[in-house]
Length: 324
Ligand SMILES: Nc1ncnc2c1ncn2[C@@H]1O[C@H](COP(=O)(O)OP(=O)(O)OP(=O)(O)O)[C@@H](O)[C@H]1O
Ligand SMILES: [Mg+2]
Image (cartoon, rainbow, N blue to C red; front, side, top):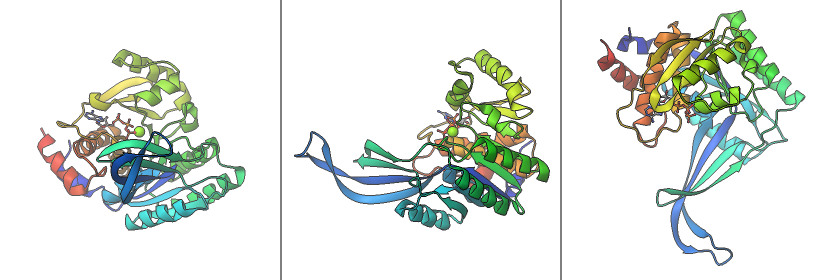
C-alpha cells in the first residue's frame, strides 16, 4: 500500500496550523555550588537554545516534510514574540500572529545541568482570548486560507482554539473541501465536531470521558460514547508504545502497531503524527493509509535524541522496508 514515491506527494502542500504557539527554551550549564541565598543549586549558564514548541512544533514538522506551513496564533507584546518570530523565519514558516497585550508569549524554560533538567519555568496565560483577539485571529485565518490544502487545529488549551474559532476553521474546511485535523486538549470534544479526524492520546481521551481508560475495550467504549458529539469526525487514538487505533462513528477500524524498534525520546511524537497524517490527507490518501505513514514518522522521531522532526528522505527510507 505504501511506497517511497508516495512521500514525494507530500511536498509543497499548503497547511495552516491554528493553535497555541510556544517557545521551548533550554538554559544549559553546570552546577558547582549551592546558593548562599537558599538551599538551591546555582546554574552557571553556558548556552541558551530556543526551539519551536506547541503548535509551532507541529508547523516545524510540516515544514521539514516539505510543506508550506503557516501558523495562526497569538503572541505577547514582548521579547518572546521576537524570539518566536526569528525561530519561525529560520524554519521557513509563515506567521499570521496576533499580538495579545494581555498575555506573555508562551514559553517553557528548562534549566539543564550536566544533561539533567533541574527545573522548568513556564510563562503563559491559559484563559480564552478576548473577543477582539478572537476576531483578529478569525481575520488571520481567512488570510491564511487562500490556497490552503489542509488545516490543523493544534490545541494545547491555552486559549486560542475557542469554540467559535474551531467552528470557523472546520466550516472553512468543509466549504473548501480540505481536511481539518485536530490535536485536542480540551475536555469537551464537541468543540471539534465535524472535523476530519481528532487525534487524542490516552490522557486526552480519559479527560474527554472523565474516567480512566487503559484497555482496548475501554478505548472502544470511550470512542462509542464520544461519537455522537463528534458528528462524523473520525477519532485516531494514539497509544504510545501500543501504536494507534482509528474509530469512525464509534466503531473500531484500522490499527497500526508502533513502528519504533528503539525508543530514546518520545516527546513531540504526537506533533509528528499530526503533521504527517495531515500531509497524507492533503495528498488525498485515505485515513487508514495516512495513519500508517504517520506511525512510521513517529517511529523515526522516538528513536532519536534531540530533533523532533522527520525529513522526506528519512520517511521514504522508512516506507521502503515496510512494504509487503
Ligand atoms: N514508547 C513508544 N514506543 C514506540 N512508539 C511510540 C512510543 N511512544 C510514542 N510512540 C509513537 O508515537 C505515536 C504518538 O505517541 P503518543 O501516543 O505518546 O502521542 P502524544 O502523547 O500526543 O505525544 P506528545 O507527547 O508529542 O503529545 C504513537 O502512536 C507511536 O506510534
Ligand atoms: Mg500530543
